[in-house]
Length: 184
Image (tube, rainbow, N blue to C red):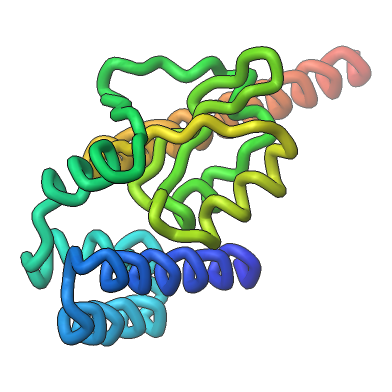
């Protein structure tokens, strides 16, 4: 959890700095969001600990459509609607979903060594650096809106939990069967 929390802090710090640098929000708004962010970290509410989430939903001083349009028009990113995207399980096999949540980014495909990542935190230099080092390949970035990315991560985390429960149940059944066979 320590590394995940460190990544979460770096991702948010860099994201906040960039939205101020690009004049998307002012420094006072960022300072206010940082206060809320630190409160969430201290309380252990890591899912809610997001500068973007705080700016959008708590302080309501950032319009996500404007942020997305800025990234598309000024930075040349494409948009990925995660509602219409099925991610191959093989892509996620070695991906830590906690790191996805810490960076608000999700690898969605890999073709011929090119990774495709959908993110709400493209502006964070720490996020881009983390994924470049982790995936060790070329990355094509897409911007995604926060609610859809959040929902997709929730769904993947639930799917992962169900899969782990199924594996645990299967192992218990196999062990019970083995005990029954050896006791007869």
